[in-house]
Length: 323
Ligand code: AHM
Ligand code: MG
Image (cartoon, rainbow, N blue to C red; front, side, top):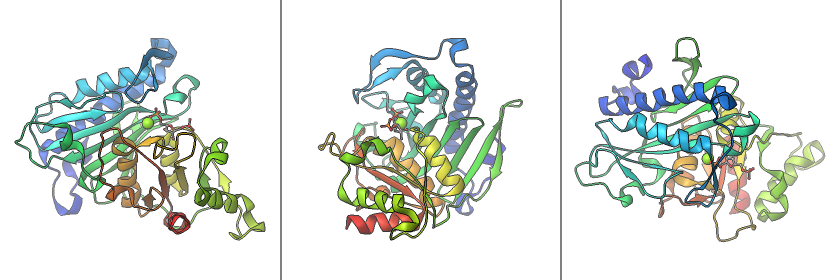
């Protein structure tokens, strides 16, 4: 991928170890894109009959994508270790090194079998003590420590969004050559929007500020917002966030009282943080209600978080409703 060799985020070339790691992730996602496209033809659909550490049923593709990402990055010299939604504990790679990789290998698992967009989300952290042997605690860094983050969405097109901390770029996979081609060099999210995304079937369980926000959107021109809103819910965070990056909007998966002890459904370290990094770098905002997600100090690799992200004016409004 020529882009990685030429890019100069914040005026400096991407360190070679980080280039190698990003290239390994991109190459694995290129192969996954091809497999996802074949689905049932190569026996990829259906449940694996197992569960992950979060107590969720694993699909065959969850496990395949996880295994392939591990195989794809295991020779990266600068990668100390990795952590995944599908594994309880981190996996040492070199043990020492500059970088830590976190990923949701296959996001949107409930959409695999129905041929709706799914994807891979990744986050790369700078290891604080590169020479010290890897420990789980090394991963527990706030989103501000990310040096790169992105996703690949396997949809009608395979598209990747990437940030290296200096804006957001987008690529589409040329299926004929296997190359990701740059399609946007400065993705920006408009501050204002008329579109929101939330699973409305949970409405009766929401907290008051979220209910108020959505009720005001639903009231449209007859309410205080004085404009009509549109709603979308794909149930793949990758695809919903891709829409927000592409044409603005708000994406929410808030805390709700179905499981009151859980802060939310989505995972902080490999879903919310990388998406928040992309959204902030595109001029949007991302909060858990009261706090900025990238500032949260994680205490557990698999911790969950309430997520509200997208167009800045709407996120400011949501934060005000929560304060
Ligand atoms: P997954 O990582 O197991 O696929 O779960 C995360 C997904 C998100 O992509 C999506 O926003 C959400 O779960 C959809 O949840 P729901 O089915 O409750 O609407
Ligand atoms: Mg996910």
